[in-house]
Length: 288
Length: 276
Image 1: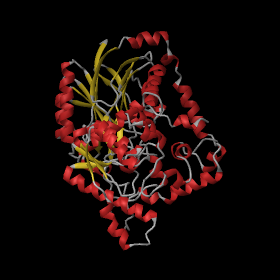
Image 2: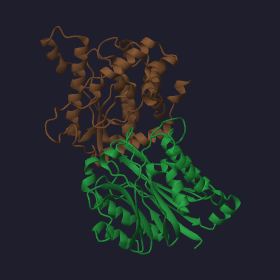
Image 3: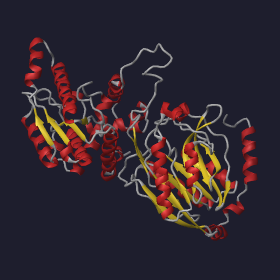
Image 4: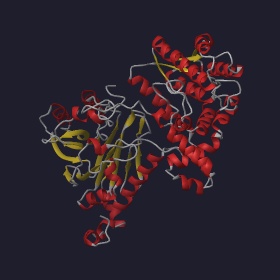
């Protein structure tokens, strides 16, 4: 399949209200269906909002197809693949910032956020358990990888997904806007845009980034969701700060054309990296 | 390093964030209206312009609350802002409200009198918040908050504050961009609590200077020694660092003595926007 219609649902979730957010999801899925979208991504914690603090325990759901919220989303995923962000509770009462990839009524993949920022304005380490698995997965459109916000501030995460075969990276976030300057974008927006473009360029992958909008406790979420092609060029961008549905068509054949011209994937030497990392970690001079 | 240029901001992006912030935060609490105290200074004038843009001028009530010694130009400037923004306004002289207290305390100092007046204005603000059914909007900027230059439970009291992360020099940039009259932007900042009071006279340094220092210490996480190496006077740096530290209490809710397993101050941690 050479063409893939994708959508980024740049929504403003209601803090702690899963039912209302579910309705927003179903509404965006309906709108995306009108535009013949085949894969629709929602932002980090799209079903709950971000700054939950002690609400984490109240809005958690299991990654279980039989739970009502998940069941409704799965029903809506019969003809369109959907990536949603939610609070996942495991059977032992740990809570994760998770993203579920739903396809044809099945939960195809769940990614649990690996890196929990606990510095400056962030206090995720206080409320959440960190995920411990990083892997690409096969979909009916190709092999994808999912990362959540702080995960992609660690370039090893994207690198690992690339080595695991991901041709399309789905990055989702609830990124608070900050950093004033004379520039027409906030500093945090610029950083994330540069990062996404860098991944697309260096990995010769499609890189989709879905960010949310809205305000929570004085934090603004800046939106500006992007789609970059494997040549590192911007394909589409949603507006800053406004709720919107960004849709575009990916020409998956571009992966072949770009990688023939620029065979970074062919020439990459993960075994070298692995060996050197092992040596570095074993050596006494390594950072503990 | 050209620190002044680091304080320059894109007024359009900032305006967009602040206006949307006001609109979203008020709406999520079920409010369509807002109320604020307008002194005729640059901070409250900017708050007034932003709030009028966010909620529509008909939904904004500003209170003009002069005292008998207030500078006449303060009221004139406030009236100009009311006319330019089209907000609703109400003027109440606080003199007969605060004088009886002053009469009972003949030894009262300027600072105490100033605090009583600031708190009287807070009472008027919160009372009209009920009558007007609007949330009280703040006017304290980042410089004032960091230096503790404000009256606790007085002019610092509000429900939402659009200016709290803007240094005074950034407030001036924003004020110019939204159309606050130049005379208001240019005049020496003053709490106008007694005749001849100016912020810079009372603080002992200029906003333009202290903003640059605070930017390095707070935003860029410079140590005091690094700021001195950057060219700031050592005594000035020490004074400012001590001041920021001394007034931390004004920026925090009261401390609660923890005795239970879960208390309001330490581990009952819900977002302010809980349930909205």
